[in-house]
Image: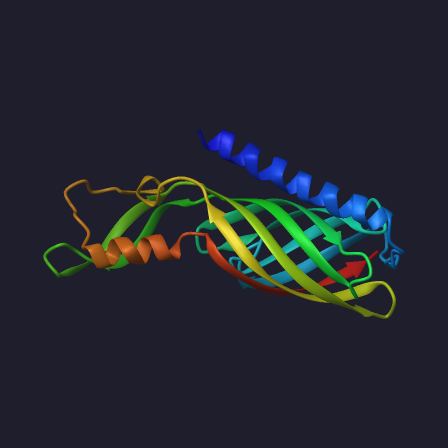
Length: 200
């Protein structure tokens, strides 16, 4: 079921980019001055590479950029695949679609409230979480080949939150407040990110 959801997202993303590209062919496009290869460094909330990460990109046309990224977030190590499209005649504005996987972790210690309102340090296993992300942003050129960028959007969470973690001690029962706190800490929701792209 999740594979079907993933496929639907990327078909929709490809369809959207195709429509925009066809429209761009009928307009005068402002070519970007990107280097074919480069690296990115970024941070943010629900950022595609987490709280801090790097990416390697390839600009295969003046408007399309393909990027792979790695980083670290609150739900473990992150890997991502991204495609970025610079809108024609839009002053360096872009759309970015991404597939992100957060790896989770074992033996994660958290101090949380139990159902009887007491608190305890609990050992968790966090399972991988997959997100599909769509953002819009803007970049500013620095010294012809480098860019500063800012973007915002939404990260869609695949699956059920209660399936993404396990308490190692099966006798422990969390309070509803703790369950909501765990759900809130999972990757997904509103995105805000800033970063630099360095042309090589």
